[in-house]
Length: 356
Image (cartoon, rainbow, N blue to C red; front, side):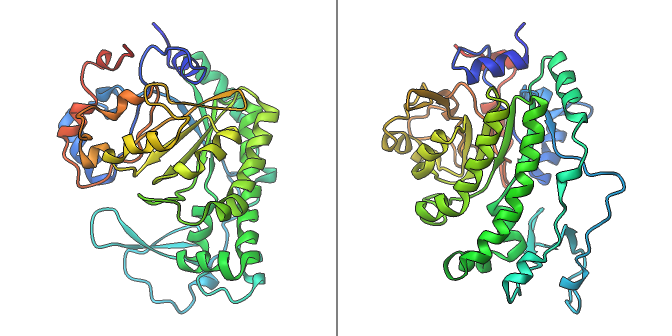
């Protein structure tokens, strides 16, 4: 029987895989209902036949001192239930798992405030354990994945959403300073995973909404893509076989060519309405349904596509989008969602998801 690792390699090498690779994450309320649905003691991933991979993130040293963010919250009246993710305050929202973000640098008054924001430096972190874990995963027939992180998302969460977007326009040096500080840490993680021999490295940013990019392609290329390209080039220099997986919500049709040319092998288009999928493929001349490959300068790359099918239903043709690609990955399925479409999309037994 073909292993998950063999199936992954066949997919990204554009050979016919033994089965479709798919998986999903769930928001807390939906996960709770799914656990009830599949029955106590049953695993959701096993029930729906999700593909398996070994996922790794950088491990901080056990004795790493905590960063001090107290000065950003002195005199601030935060509601009960507020928690912190690094320097970011998460205020409970009005429903489900949602939180309101309050950013630590929301009131930054000068570039020095950006430069002084506390961040961990992973330069000296021990990464020697990763290679052994990769070998263990491979021995079990499972691909290994390293998570590098975000850049744009991390930056606006630290600075504040509106504040960061205004920085791009009015104070680009501020925005670039914060992005470069984040990119340096992304690079450290990427190099560590590439050297350890992971099969793919995942990263990304939600740079689009349902209709278009959040900013012009020119700004995206200058402020964000140029930094990611440096990181991806370093990955490929160290480990040419390593696949690069880039995620973005929304309609990123305008920049798919840039991503492929930079070496991205897979991506996620979450938030693209199912009714627009056919239009999306027609607009991108080199992207063909049923093949899902983009050829640039003679190099063939695999594009992994997903949409919000579970929240909007089937496209008018009634044809599931899953048939468009040999490999796809679902973003976190949101609420409110009925369990019924999940059963329709991920039928049991798992053999039904074999590639015809």
